[in-house]
Image 1 (cartoon, rainbow, N blue to C red):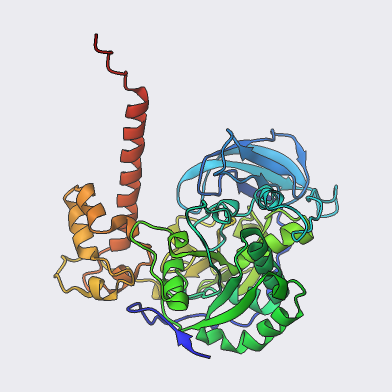
Image 2: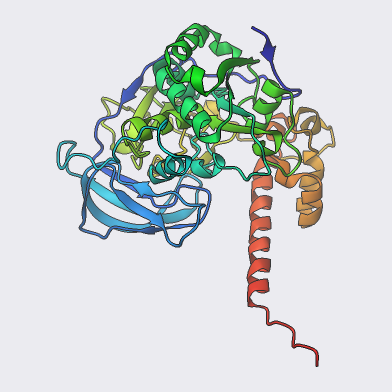
Length: 463
């Protein structure tokens, strides 16, 4: 099988040995969960429960505060009692309203799942409504509402669905576990997406370090009764290189197309879904199960029991018993939610597992790089290694000068925040962190301008 790739990028130490090939272990029921009511990219939700309410696993606890498509509901992940509704720090280091549910036991009250739904006999509208009601967002990290991605506008024709199994971040092995343990659900989810969108071609993209899984996945494709009727499903092997899992780079590697500047995958005729998202879609139809659990990797030198786990959304890692998850607190130097390249460093472990939490990395001092920034020496390494072919040094100069417009012109909004520039910078300048701040400042400026336009008085009519 031919191996595709993209230009530039990095060869990183994978550091996956501690969890690679390990099965996903079901976490014991935590004593509590802390569930953020907003875990998606879009309009905010409104809390639907009150302190003292008894809730069932699968019960909707938050949904759209106002009518609009860019929302997805949030569901209780355990049976229990609502003890608090209050602001808590989330994995992106911002505060948001969270619902604290104290556990009552796995057998207390059963579950409140949706009724199963046949995806191949229901209408497209019913299928999209099911995916929204199940609270499914992109589980690769961005948190974009899945039902929106699967319903592109008519002027954006789609001809290829890509299942993203290229798990390029060091330490993380969750997607590999999905490919290994749930290939049947992955293929089912992929056929459902093909049925909804009417697209006849799908590619399962993964890096060549997972080539051993190809025979098993091909067998599942042959065994799926719907696969042949909805179109053609194939496997696309990509070279193991960072950031191969980025959807724009995966599209380029597998189709030869480029997403235009400022565009989305649909501008290249593609829809990309993480393999975990496709499994969640399959379960939303076959089991009626909302997105209430998350598979993730817990690893790093300060984790004595590195493993892939499945935990209720809202779980705090310290609430898991030491016999299941043991942490070397005396060695813990840095906590990352997500991988070391694109994840967020958080101040403590009282941060809940969210729908888009692919991993929690507990790093020792030896695993971290804590060097002071030096002056930029204009070496150009950030440019040579940027997979999107941007000029990070120019973007950084513009941001330092406070010129947001110049930063945008240099490509700020095209930056995929992969961190390759920061990794390669000999002066240790935290470039990607500055680009994230710059994007935040840009959003604030745009919101201020929109608010000003909304409140501006209309000019008096000429007489």
